[in-house]
Each structure stands twice: as structure tokens, then as C-alpha cells.
Image (cartoon, rainbow, N blue to C red; front, top):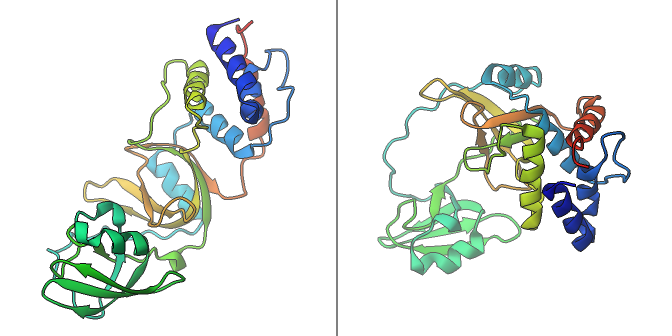
Length: 272
């Protein structure tokens, strides 16, 4: 028995809540996993990572085009930030605020948007919408950015596309599994995450695909608004990151389960 298999057995024994995810990794070569796994998303993510069929920009564009996701012209470079005035639409990003006087206001209204109702020489008042709405006062010059924690609101443009997508994406900022022997390495990658109490699911996304476009360098990317994970749309760049799966939500390829089982069986070869 390999050191990896022994480590997985110890993890399964010490963490009953993780056994459903760990036991498939211990499956013998001659058969399918003996224990039913209830975490379908975890299995699907593992399948995509082990399969390692990277989707390039052209294929991603074709998939999204068939789903009806619109193509937008590249954004023009924004001009220097102008002072805030009454009626401006803003939102709050507490993580970017550097003004100690605005910590309380930023924490209270973080992620919310509203409209400027009053502007002074050293403060701004915003009327926020939503269940946690109300008036918020932000100290400092009437500008957006880190000095106030206020930023000009950018609509997620949900109305442009109503297509919900599912994808497996490893960005530049996401830990990448080694690539030499992907089946064995993915197992080690998952084991390392489980040892830290993680399930390595940060590569899994669902959300509303808003639009496609090209940046100034001509690279293709698209935006996805995952309301469960983010308070703003996320840009997905298949050139910089690894896009391993992209499809419409609840419409997975019919053969993924059998292929996943075969990959897991292959991963068990040589373990005994």
C-alpha cells in the first residue's frame, strides 16, 4: 500500500464527514467505488480536473454564442475619476477602504449600492437601497476609491443574458494541480486540500453568463456573475487561466459519470 493510500485511509478514519469523498479515491482497480458518493459537484469537479481537456478561447466563444450570450465591443479606457455629485450611483467595497473614519460605514453597507444625496467639502452622504438600506455618511474628499471606500456602481447587466452556466476554472490566483501525471497528482492535490479541511471546490463556478468581449491585447474573455460567491461579476480569461469545463447549468454531458468512474479505477491501479 502506497504512502498516499495510507494517508487517505487515515484521513477517512479521522474524518467521518469526509469519507464520502475519500473512499472513491481508494477504489480498487477491478471495480467501481463501493460507497455511493452524494457530493455530485465534487465528483464532477474531479472529473474535469483529471480529464484535463482545456477549453481555448475559440471553443469557449462558440459555446457561449450557442447559448445566446452577447458579444460586446472592447471597453474604452476610463477617464480620470471625477468628483462625486448628487445623483451619482455608487457602491461600497469595504475590503478596498483605507480610511479609518469610514470603517463602520463600509462594514455596514459593504456590497450595497445607492445614490449620492449630499456632497460636502469633506464628506459624502449616500442613500442605500435594499433590506440593509438607509443613509450612510463617508468622510473624506468627494471622490471614489480607497480614500472613501465608495466606487462608481457598475451594473451586472443581468438582463443582457439569462443563461446560467457551470464551469470548472483554475485562475492564475488559484492553486494549480501539478500536470506531469495528472491522475496521481490530482489525488495528491485533493489529499493536500482535505488535510487542510478543504474540498478544493474553489475551481467550481455557477452563475449568469453576462457577456463576451476582447481586451485591448485581443484576448477573449467573458464575465460571469456568481451571486453565491461574489458581489460583482468575475472576468474569465481562458488564455490566462485553465478553463476545464464550460456548459449550461443542469445540462452536463451524459457520459461524465462513467468516465469519472473509469478514471478513478485507473487511479487505483498499483495502489495495492
